[in-house]
Structure formats: structure tokens, C-alpha cells
Length: 613
Image (cartoon, rainbow, N blue to C red; front, side, top):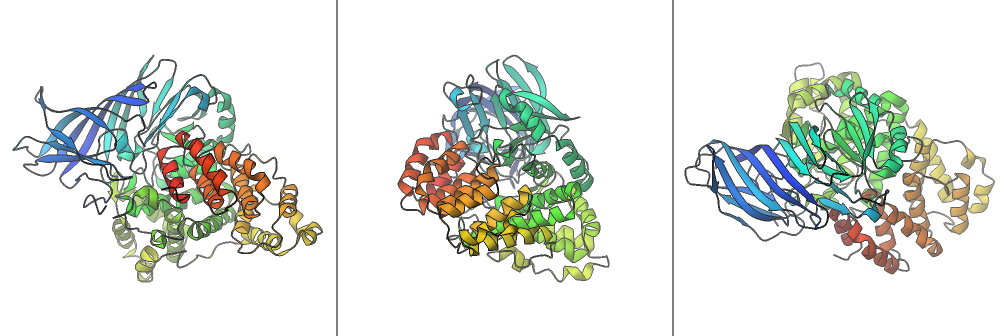
């Protein structure tokens, strides 16, 4: 495929020549045809004199007209769309009149989306909780905004937007913006903070809300909204903690939308309206730290944004780092360190399985010249990135020194899109004239940014909570069922987070003695796993059942895989089943029967995991 553009390998747009400043979206939602129909009006800032054409990204979009708007008149312009590049999309070329001057330029594009746009998910009433009304939602990160509207689909370009959406009057429409005006069947939105295209988001369904705080509500279908309000009741405290760490919150509103189970991620940091998976509803708030992660994105990612997805760690590594600090301030330093150590267990698993054949994607800064961002997506930027930041924090003298730098960095690059060298410049500028300047020479940037595998240096963490889970994993992997039955150590009280980490560490053991039905039974009865509502627990238990090759429990495993299409869970489950010859045919059959209910990003990656693509 090669690099599509000089600034962003995954986008045809040329932000060095022209930049979108403001977009006006006009959409009519057609549930019968599963399409958005309407137009987008872009106000471009032309940076180059005599620009002959504007290149935009599209994917399976049917463009019907392109019009230049100037001085009250409308001038139709020529346009054409290139052949598609797999998993990337197409180039829309807009031909400009000769002598186009620098400065402001307005172009309207009339179009409709494909009925199978990769960035939109359409659910029929039967796929919703209420069973009476349809539902639609978007997921534009990393490069799926181009399937929703023709745009410069690169995080290097940020723009404000207005939107008018016509929709069935009995349904509620929400976007990654503030509601400006509402009447039955028509909602208008305004996003006055510039954002990259991947943060444009929409959801439409029979939705209701409950308040979580002064500027914060949770939205969901009626059947679960009260449960959601209880689960995420700490949102306002998390938001306040994040502001203390990172500076003022600029987005005015912070709402949560609890999505249908086919939502492919844990959360998506759409401004003003975070989308979260229903798999967080554990009944005890134990998985609500995903909300802390999405809140942190309000600064790291949404305000300061990676210029392209090769530098994705600037979004995600920083966000995990801030998220762990929010957790630390709310639950204590031991929990912060335990969280970061647990993340390293997850990273180890990712390197061993998902990235086994593509170790080059385990670098902190990756090369996406011949790889789409969806295929490169892994826990590396999250966990290796946050570990690097913790290493730097310790190197410069701890949180009291590093947190003021973090605020300075966020202020310096607010509303901008940056790459790793910009972060490096901020760090050097901040510390070069202080008593910490010698530490700058200690950092081996090449080692951290370009070496494959686990982080090259593991910082010194408080291991007291982690040692318990390590010891339990050692016991369960090395002892027989008979030896474990009489062992009082396995009956010690542990927290839900320790249980999740212990199960993860057990999965990572190369050898597990006697991994059979009776060992799984003992594990389930000891920790009361059978009735667990916690998706993280159920996910890990299912992986151990697969490893024990308990074919008679295959139906139960597939039931879990079908209960949600969160990629964190379903990809490893399908990968594990694909490596089990006896179970693979049933896994493939099951996948084929449900893949149309998955978002494109999810079905596409599982097809590759199962070797079907």
C-alpha cells in the first residue's frame, strides 16, 4: 500500500496544503436502508496558492454532487473517486477552479453512506434490550470517519462542527457535541472545540438518562439505566480528580452512553459523550476504571492528539498513565502500582499471542506504511507507553516533579496534533535549566521507542498486592488437585482486581499441572466463579476452560463470545479456539453466523485471527 500521505500514512489528505476548519453536517437517518443521507459543508483554509485540487478520504460513500460556495453563488465542481485500498478506503479528488487563492474556501458535498459503512452499526429492534426500536451508533477511530462523511480523516487536522440530524421522532439522537436545539424528529448539535475526524460520533436509539453530577449524565436503554447510574456513580469524583491533575476541563459536558453489547471497545472517548461497553456492568463498580481512562482522554488524546496513528502511544500511553493516577488518588498508591503491574501481565499475553508473528508492531512508535491502524491495534501503546512515562517520572524525582511537567505539556500542546519528537522537545525545554537536567542524558530514546517486546526497563513498583497473585498463580500451576484441596493459602481473601490478575497470570503459565475438569471445578468453587457477573473474570475462566480442552463446555464458551463483541474479549477467545483443532470448526461456524452483528473493525480482525482472510 505504501504511505498515502506525507503527514499521515493512512490518509490521502494533504494537511500541509489545505486544512478543514469547520464542518456542517446535515443528515437524514434512514433505518430501512441503513444509510445516512445528506451533505457535509467543509470550510477549508487553503494554505497554498493556486491549489488545483483537494484530496479527501472516503470509504464506500456515494457522492452525488460537489459544490463550491462563494459570494452567495454556487459553482458545481468536478470530482472523482479512486479504486479502494483494502481496509483503508478511497481518495476523493475535488477539482478547484484555476487561480484558487489562499484562505477560506467553502465546499459542500452531497452524498449518502453505504448500507454497510464500516464506521456505523445498525441494530434491528431484536438486537436491542427494549426489543421495540432500532438503534444505530458510530465508531470512527481509527480511520472509519471516512465511511461516515468525506473528510480529511487524519488526526493531524482538527475542526469544529455543527450538525443537524433528522431521525424518527420516538428516538433520541446524541453526538460528540452539545445539543443546541431539539424538536421531535430533529436535533441540532454544536462542537466548538476543534477535534479530529475520528472523534465525530453519533448514536440513535430509545435512550433515557440519569444524572451523575453537575454536568454529567448517563444514557442507556430504560432497562439498564438505573443499574448504569449506580455502577458509574463515581464519575463526578473522577472528573474532578482528572482536572486537578491535568488542568481545566474544556468540553463543558461529560456524559456517558452505555452501548449495546456489539460495541467493539471498552470505551471510546467521544467528546462530551463517552461511549462505554455494557461489559463494565459488574454490579460492584470494580470495572469503572475504564471511565477514568475515558475521562483522562479529555486531555490526553482529545486536547493533545497524536498527529498520526504511528504515534498512538501519545494518546493511549499518556491516558493509561493519567488513569492510573486517578485510581491512585481515589484508592491509594498500592492500587496504582498494582494496576500498572497487572497491565504488564496483559501486555505479556498480547506479545505472546496477538503479536507473535508481527513483533515489529510491539515497538512504541510503529511504521504504518504497509499496515492499517486497525491491524496494528494492540495493548502496546497503552501499556508500554504508560510504563515509559512512569520510568520518566521516577527518573525525574517522582509525582511532585513530574505532574507539574505533565500540566505544562498539556497546556503547551492543547488543541494541537503532535508526534513523539514534540513530546521530547517539551520534556527537554521543561527540565534543561533545572537541577534535573542531567537526567535528560540518561534516557535511551532509541531503546524505548524502537525496541520490540516488553518495556526495556521495568520501574520499581510496590509489589505487595501483586505478590499475592503471583504466589497464587504459582500454586495453581504447580500443584495437583489433591494438593490444592488441602492448601489453606488458596482460600485467603483477595480483591476482585487481584482475582482478575491472578487468573491472567495463571493463563500466562507455560505449564499447568493437572489442568483438567476437576482443577477447573476446584478453581470455580474456591473463588465462586460460576455465578460471576464480572466479564473480566468470565473471560479469563473461559480461556482456562479452552486450555483444559473441556469440549463439553464449548457451548458455554461460545455463549460468552456471543454475549458481547468487545474485541478485548472475543479476539483472544476466537484465537484460542482456532488453535484447538477439535473446537475450531464449531468456532468458525459460530463466527460466520454472528459476524453480521459485529462492527467491521471486529469482524475484520477476527477473520484474520481465524485465518479466514
